[in-house]
Figure 1 (cartoon, protein in one colour):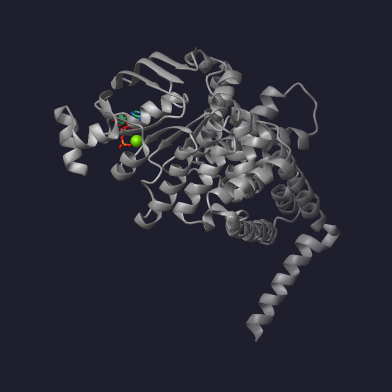
Figure 2: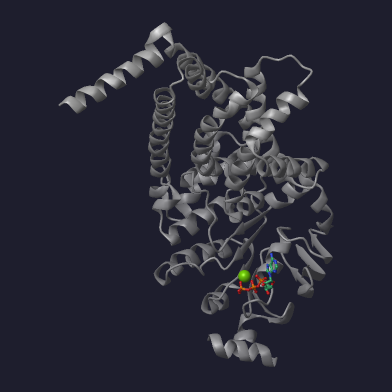
Length: 230
Length: 243
Ligand SMILES: Nc1ncnc2c1ncn2[C@@H]1O[C@H](COP(=O)(O)OP(=O)(O)OP(=O)(O)O)[C@@H](O)[C@H]1O
Ligand SMILES: [Mg+2]
């Protein structure tokens, strides 16, 4: 009994000290809002970039296709923290933009490369016979894409995009490298005033886990519905 | 109606068609037979330019079609007059049977929805599938899928129909129902080129048989000539194996 009581005392002291005192939990709340903002906006930007890049790569042979190839290789071949810091400290060094925007741009550019590959793979996975059937009926390339290929590719693409979104949410946790006060940085800020690491770090991990678990659950439900419509 | 002059096709270094010459007349039913890998599919797919010939000419109603390859408008125009039925059916799995049939008339011929649907129902009736109009392909048997695919092709009112082994991926008990539909088309005077391994069917339905071997038309003639009295050794050898 004594042991349990003393654990309880220690934990409640720690929680009080880390979160309640001086409203320190607001570091996490504010950070959470920023993490969500960056993730959602970067995901939208990533989808736009990814769509354009995928179309350029699939239609092939234009000079843009080479650029698109480089873009995808470079982004996938370098760590996201390095990309983020290069964009903040090198490319946009002389431009005064809010850090949230810079992070959104960096993560959007990063995500775009992965989204492009997801879309491209989803389209290529549709059987070649579908294109041949469409074209042999006299449908143009664009109409074949629109009415025949894309509707089938979407079923491959959407679940993978959901995964990419979950990965993106976790990756934004390096935003602290450009001094953006996201959720992870919130824990660091609390630690720097309390010199206590356990409670804020475990709590932040828990928050990420809850968010990704909920997204994953939503995603599998959605996938099941997609499959049911086959 | 179709005139093929010295048609060659390479895949990389591999010469698959080695100079094909032939002429197919309006209303004629031509069956192509021959061993696997002899270039039957490649030849057929050259006729609607799904494969791009390396050399040679294809004239349709006297007009060369080779030039259309680089002109998307002409290419689509050409293809809407040449229907094709595939071994693997290639129905659009996300559309019902009737949607499969109405798509091209609505999007290519700009036909109104009601008109396209009533035409589709007519065609489904013709292939004996009125009751399956609103089913998705995944709920149809192989034979039913192929009949929908034939109806889909006919919906464009093509001048010519190409068939690439239309019954080869069907269970034996479904072959008959598909061949019946093709026979009906033959009786109605549709110009057709059919690659097939169904020798009985080829004999019955065709006006002319082309026997292909190693990239050329090795022998051709009336079905009675080819099947009863083949003139050349490899034709004889092939027929003795398959008959
Ligand atoms: N896209 C392609 N790329 C490379 N080679 C090909 C391609 N399509 C066909 N070939 C080759 O061309 C040759 C002829 O193929 P084709 O499909 O025309 O034969 P086929 O007479 O239709 O045979 P089957 O009766 O097996 O269908 C084969 O050797 C095949 O491997
Ligand atoms: Mg073949």
